[in-house]
Image 1: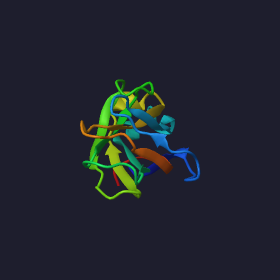
Image 2: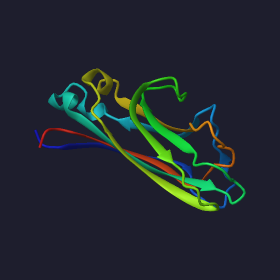
Image 3: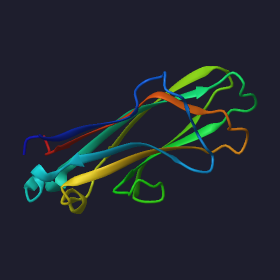
Length: 161
């Protein structure tokens, strides 16, 4: 069966670098992206079992010049079918990123992931994906911030050609 385009979504958490930065915590994951990719057009068809989802995004991290010390690490992860909390849903992607030692530095982190949801997930008509970030280093992590842009994109297709 030919490829069938289903849906494209964009979740823009922050679009402007002029907004006040959001601190990144090492105890609580920050919810920074949310998508609901539509799959209803293939429910009940031969393509229901052949859905593929492409996910991408960018998160810009700021390390101000007054942050000294080690090289903190971050964890970014995407869950499927959660309720907007980090503990819910199925983990479909995980990335670890180590911030450099330079001060007053902006770190744009790019994310690209894919998902091959089961037919039962596709049957719901919409698949929810959520993006989170958390600092994981036990060293000094205070002073890391999210500064725009922060965007999360998703596209669903079905078929086998």
